[in-house]
Length: 348
Image 1 (tube, rainbow, N blue to C red):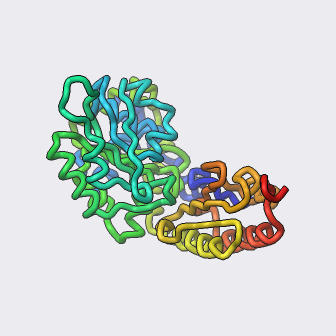
Image 2: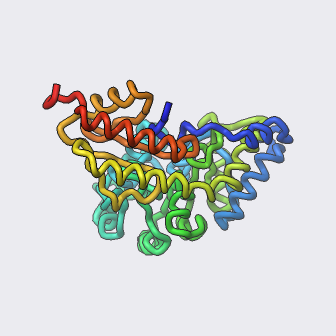
């Protein structure tokens, strides 16, 4: 099976499993798990932040940030296909009492002009803007990347309007590899940032939320409120620590496989790929004269898995568990199916 659905399907390495078995542990709610503490300290060092908090998921990390940065009745400006808007179950409304103010970005990325136009005017009869959320890389735009300069230019202007900025950096290490930039530079100026250990970095579970010491102290309480308090969590933090130290440098392999896949797809009659958007490990394909359901079903019959992200759009994600050989095999299967034709309303 060649699983291109997401880099969340990565499994822990043998070294991670060994570290998990041997990890010293303690009760994290008492701050006594040495492995969790080391993971948080190391993440803070890498991102040049005062403090960090290990949490079960990226969604929880994002929603903790929303809760801290806003108050009920405010709006959160974010990109229209961002993870926080599309895939986090309206949690900012359910938990923080905020509504989303989605803005369609350019290849999924926001700029100051778009953000400025969405900031609520200073009138008593409009909900006030409470937070701006950015995403780097942008998942549904095909893993597109914001540079440090682009991020900082936006953040400075947002701060000039006395608003906080949260960065959903689930795959920020992919952005760093693509740009040959440090994740500290990519997130500098943002009031909070989260990254995932369980995607391309291949840990089995977990994300990290970072900010200043006051923010993280409050985040610890909100994590408990959300049911995210953990006990002997060093068992999973050990894999996360190895992921943080060992996995970023190999992400270039995933990027190269995604590029190979994308360049092969544009030669096929049923697929349309914006090659300029294929910057990291995600390939978004628009389909011609066929449906996502038809393509996904035909691929599954050949032991290739992908996900639909629209009626005529699919996403393919490369990761550590998809080798160059697997990528070439998937390309061969796609070529054969493309020649034969996919089930669709136009071709059935």
